[in-house]
Length: 169
Image (cartoon, rainbow, N blue to C red):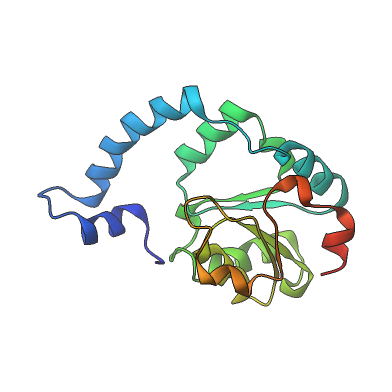
């Protein structure tokens, strides 16, 4: 929707708290849960290794830095990225293309030289709005969304991905 959690939550919950306060309270519970349950998707580590060996890499997320840092700590993937763009570094969230354009600029590559890997409709729209190629690996929570038809390639898992498929885009 292009809104950060603190903005979005106030559109679905009528409560006498700020969105930032709700986010902080949610994170106390959420961070505790992910410390014991967060795992990489099957094939993700191999995928990240291939990408890092062959391309400049960036993680572009609407998530805040504290959450991203916790994910890096739990599953140990920070070294796979040359650049990390978190939600605080852009004015608007996805589907606004600004986050991907910022990453391309910082990596000193043209948008049409980039491939975006996404699991969510807003990310697919953001990638396509930049002129980048988009590979979709839909999250099970949004797999039926028609936005996935905009992707240049749709896969069911990271295990299906190969360098040949990326170069063919």
